[in-house]
Amino acid sequence: MQILTFRPDDVLFFKDSRPMTGSFMGHGDRWPLPTTLNSALHAACHRVSPSNNPPVHRRRGKRISVQEEKFGALFSVGPFPVETSGNESQWFFPAPADLKTLSTQASIAPAGTLAGITSLKSGLLPLGSRIPPSKDPAPQWLSQQEYEAYLRQEDRKLERPTDSRFFEAEHTIGIGLDSDTNATEEGKIYSRAQMRLRETARLGALAQLPMVGSHSADFLEEVFPSAGKIRLGGESRVCTVERRTVSQLPLPSAPKCHGRRIKWILLTPAIFQAVRTGNRHPGGWLPNWVREEDGTLQVKLVDGPGAGKARRLRAQGKSIAAPREIRARLVAAAINRPQIVSGWAQSDGQSGRHGARSTLLAVPAGSVYYFEAESEDDAQRLVSVLNWHGLKPAGGEILNLRSGLLGEKGFGLGVCTTWQNFEELNI
Figure 1 (cartoon, helix red, strand yellow):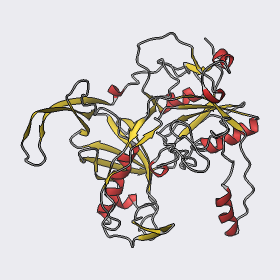
Figure 2 (cartoon, rainbow, N blue to C red):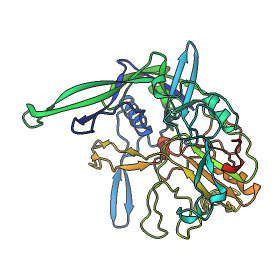
Figure 3 (cartoon, rainbow, N blue to C red):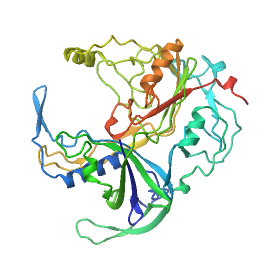
């Protein structure tokens, strides 16, 4: 796996412009989504090797679609904030939604005594808070060490966990222009905010692009031999890229989980699409692999390859044991407001597809899902399919991504630990 760190040459990017009407002001001071990084890496690969592959023709019913699949194996995760000091670097990750104080101990938890007497559907448990109401801002980022202390349920003090540790918002005012006449539109002005990274801050990401017939095992070694340039952000600002190969990923490592209660925390956003036909599913905040149609919220995952993949592997002569259903159900969730994922697609000259991409709503990173398994064995098997490194010690391989869409762009990366009822917390 390759580690890429980005430093903007002119420090400004990720613009957000809005008309100055009422409360609508520019708010570009937000961390970029994984789609922004993945698109920039795709563009960088095409600049290094611009020749087109033969188009792929796919038949869907009576319709044949033409798709360009060059660099389709590109996989990326991030970007995450990285703080540098000399040759040392510290990675940071979005704070879990159940942290509300400057401590690594969970502030909220499912309240078991209120089961069945709330208006929540499907027997979901409400969340209880162990701290009084406060206007103090909640933590926004945790370092890798702080995150692992949270996963081990240790009580550790957090320091400077907000966005201002890594960047400041720089605001400017502009005038509106008529696109037909290129003249000023009377009475039209707008504001915009841009990210200005601090001197010690970088954008860090993980990526890999295995290529058949390439001079190197990973094509990114040809795109960025050790360092290079890339266009990144809303205004395609130029960034300097540093690349290095690692065997140990700088992601939070999950501890050994005991008991039947497992919570899954998202390190990156996830998208769960609605299903309108067959086994209908509302999507949105509810994972597609949680049964909704009968109201039980049972997990629909198995501890091995699905039936279709198992058949393909057996056809290749591989011995595959029949997968077992994981008996566990979702009992609560702590989720912040959704993130909007959109973008713009350029025509590839083959399919002619271009224009605005579909707008999707993503469950934000830091969201927490609480599960309860029927047995400790089921709990361990649930961890094996939700944890980014499964039950193996954390290393250089990502085993699980549980987003319904955009998994190749790093959506749905999560880590597991255990949880306690609100009544059991040390208050």
